[in-house]
Length: 262
Ligand SMILES: O=C(O)CCC(=O)C(=O)O
Image (tube, rainbow, N blue to C red; front, side):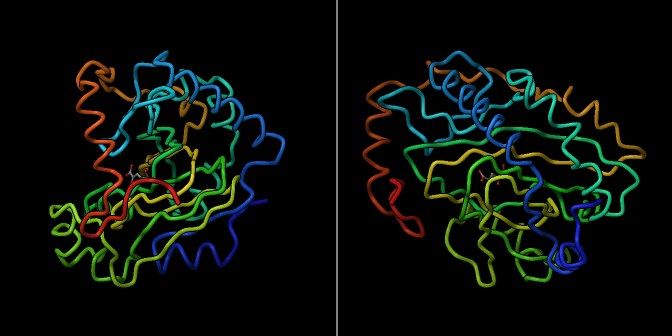
């Protein structure tokens, strides 16, 4: 039976996004979460090179404040085994009507002691409005992700406001934005061109994926996905610079609070 209800489909068509709950069964969720936490620990100990450390995640004490692991399927065979059997292929087919879906990006996002407040941006050009979809798979309860729906003037494909906003690196609130509340085990699907920004105020752990339309689905091949990124350069910043940056995160700025979690 498909997890997609009439209301998911209506939301996806009208807004460009929808949240599907209980995609990951409870026993799998617990095992996957533990496996991903082990991955996170290894990344903090610099055992994994293909990581993201955002500008606003300075590391100081207790290991690297890792914000993402780029090649999760290489490092967590459990996640790689789960992915093709997740049911995402059927959900994507039901929501989009695509003949098939190809995985174009997979990255685990995490963070602990700082908030994340990203800039408004699109993940695909407006030309891909109906052929590219982001799916965010939550392993912990999460709240804060901001998105503007397809009919909102900032997301609208026939206006340039969204692209302008992206160029301005804007972080403040936008009229008509939705704030996503996602329980662990749920998956948030959104058209990739919609204007959105990451935001969270609690430790988080999710798998960020992006799919494009394809002639067929080869779900078994999804776990083969590799992200061609260079290893993170841990030597690029000096302790004094990290300390200065850490201090600056205590101070609220225009359209941005301090980056310490509440
Ligand atoms: O970190 C997040 O929650 C969102 C990241 C994001 O928007 C992206 O990777 O496109």
